[in-house]
Length: 246
Image 1 (tube, rainbow, N blue to C red):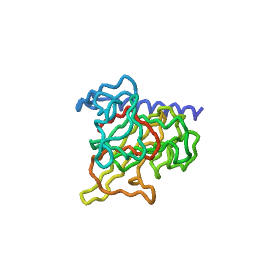
Image 2 (image 1 turned 135 degrees about the horizontal axis):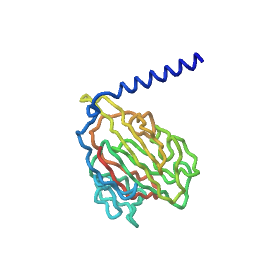
Image 3 (image 1 turned 135 degrees about the vertical axis):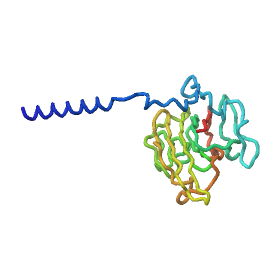
Image 4 (image 1 turned 180 degrees about the vertical axis):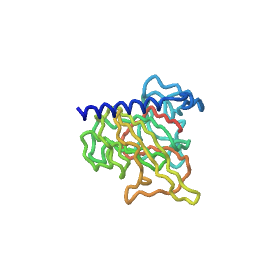
């Protein structure tokens, strides 16, 4: 009985304290400025919102340039662009830093090779930080090199890969690294990636630029750099690419 009385008294005290906490003018905690910018969302989750920069709409390469400043030689067909092996990487004419990126990609329906030799490409944010593109459907390779990894750095939280020949999506939130005036790193790049609707990188800190051999490291660069798509020799296709500057 004594225990019940003490519990009842405690609950009553909490109720009184909460009630006292709600006294005063509620308008004191209301913020009316700044007013968020109005952005009209796309008709679907894949469609570009009103403030996005459309980098590829399936019609031309007007936002892109080929390796070494030459014209893009990749194949354009049925609203998609496909790597032309040995023609080189392509990069955006415009540079980007902090951003939200949507990109759709597809590995060949005819499976050739295994491991890293199967449907390989890459998306290099700021031209330096690689989000891996690979046919990782029933295809074993090193975990920090499979689809949705930050290449040779961060293993994805899950393998959400679709079958070869099926379109896949990456939705990316990227925060660029910051450097001091003397070039020293102030803050690491961070990335969140949703692969086919599945969270696979959760505000993860990057170790540095992507390296095939050796330890990643940060090298000072500007706040905005081009986005690069890799020619790894496989017939990987891309479509519906848009980006929002943050």
